[in-house]
Length: 123
Image 1 (cartoon, helix red, strand yellow):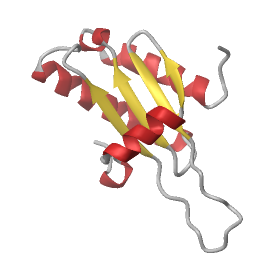
Image 2: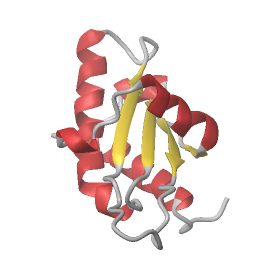
Image 3: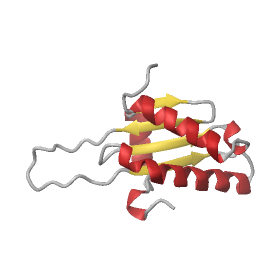
Image 4: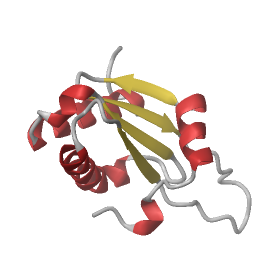
């Protein structure tokens, strides 16, 4: 489970990540990343934690399938929080095929999208 301090909950935070962040699409999901905007040179300012949120629409499936996809994505994101710069906002939007995908397929797409956003992959 994703710890509470790492969860994205407010509508404004989701909107900031989606509208002002970078985006990487994969067949099963789209990842939006708004990098941390804290100034490391300001004394006494600690970096806020990376926060992640998930969007799983009815196009993915019924309530049981949507909740299963959200649980899988939260679990996968928990292990990848250390890769993302502190203070960043991450929104993972599941596409309709995510309901039929297994854990390994979701992990592969999430890794590829994060690698592309963090500068490790080519377009």
